[in-house]
Length: 234
Image 1 (tube, helix red, strand yellow):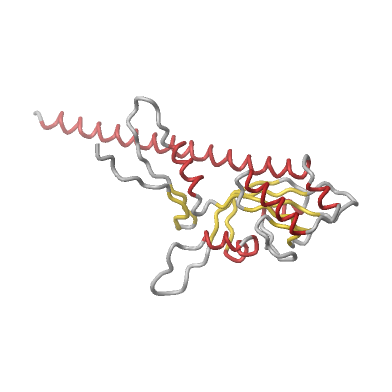
Image 2: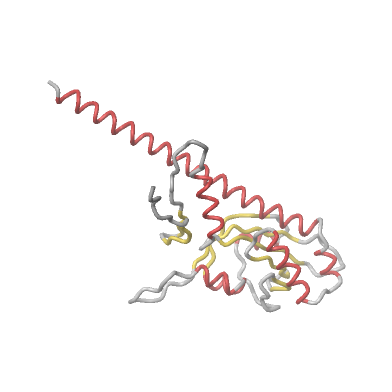
């Protein structure tokens, strides 16, 4: 007679814990999604401001030397914590770049860049292959590569997960048609993934510390993981 109530309680308790775990997981995923959407909005807004309210169009109209344009883009990319910021012509060839990419380099046209070339301000998550990343910046291709290559079999190619945005410069006769394209590479992005962990596992006064781990995956590949700290000896 005692075993039946105990068994029922155990089943009910397991169901409650499973429900709680699913609810917590859902909340964590929602927090992560909101944070990443905020980052996407930030990138889009920043690029829009650069073509509308800064002197970038004037620098283009004055045919500013590429080295100077590169330095301006690098400074502004750093200020906005972007991994790249590029001005391209209507055929997708580089005019100037925050990473110093050679003039005339052809950047393969993906969704965001295509929309920008068509005059539409766009931001999105993008999955870019090694060829595209290499054209944007060799540093991005290096970061998007695997931590180590397999001992046997073909090498694993870089694959990048980005939050990117693109927008067209205002149409004018003073300079050639051009677009501004920029974004954040999520691969091995320690600062972003650590901030994401703080959002998902917030620390509140008086509450026990939860050293959760956050990770981003792309096509079955782990592209970013938060740091794991040793257990507190106390």
